[in-house]
Image 1 (cartoon, rainbow, N blue to C red):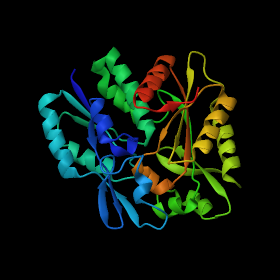
Image 2: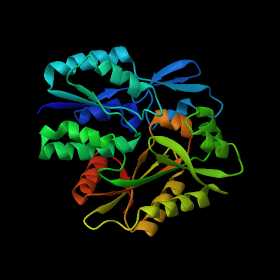
Image 3: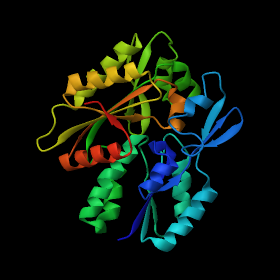
Length: 303
């Protein structure tokens, strides 16, 4: 079966990176001080905070449906199936809009997404592995992606350094937003069922990061025959702070974390120097494929 994968920019890839993978790309949009940018095209994880600071007025918006329709028309001529994996339905209207659009295209299946950031990419590494084994089960694999923690177990935490961005961005669950407004504490935000929810709090950023790493140990012990896979992310953190995170993850879990950057469309809401920790239990073959996938994208692993 000849299939195409379409992702949006919330997964952390740029358009150039997606095309190198043979995937297709739908940019979300970022408006900063009245100027429109295509996420992953005009703004990348490396340059976001050259354009944006805590005093900037900014908002994010969904993919351009006209562009998406053109892409679906083009791909429908060349592929048997088109799989679209957008940002979580709880964070953006993109998922619902693309699902409605896809009703006009017999070959298009939009994942009813509850993921964001590199969680989407990890899902797609698993999906492509499964397709290499038996492509006739494509819809079954997508059904699995639409239900959290079916092909894996995971525990995800976000630690924002500057609470004002999260509150201003309006992407927090109300309970988590209430915590973030208490500016003398540092919230730990967990990712659950496609939403950002309050997990815990700390008093200083460095101690809160250590607390977040400790909380990820809830995934232990690892089931027999499975493997631990750890990824960390930042939005332009200090190098020493990033290295401390990687070293502390190694001390707690005994494995080296793959480290990358937070997508701009998400970084707008987390603010600069935020950190994220993603801890998975998965099949060893998929863990190895994830390591290879992200290293090929230039992600680092502190050895």
